[in-house]
Image (cartoon, rainbow, N blue to C red):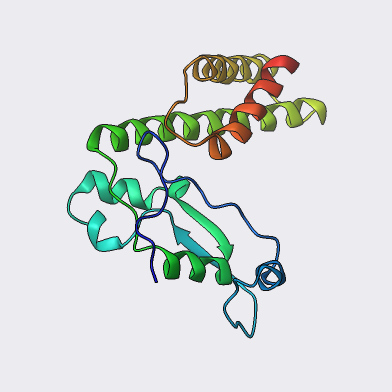
Length: 173
């Protein structure tokens, strides 16, 4: 029997499920369905889909990559078997989530740019040194600015690895 809606935090956002290492782990707990094979599937944290197709904001929110997780299909099936779905967060929360997600995407782009420039510098594969150093400085400023912005909506499980990498680059600069 389904227990209701999937658990949410105080902001009305779904808490990402804790990953399991193997289907055997669920079998040991006595909760795994009888799967003949173990494979990975993509789970939307917000479902059913029909609730999120009513307007562009909720659709964009549901389909955002931060709101989709890869998990073992046996765990995925259990979640859908146990819960009827998730409640739609309010429009302001969804808009703030998408704004923070865009900041984290920009942060990721700048991190990759700095890593690429650093690699090119280390391997002496830079043609225009001053241009590369200026470009690197620009991306470090973007990183510095974004890391000073509080990330309050997106779950730390998603945001922290990106922010941690950004801080490593700032400390190395």
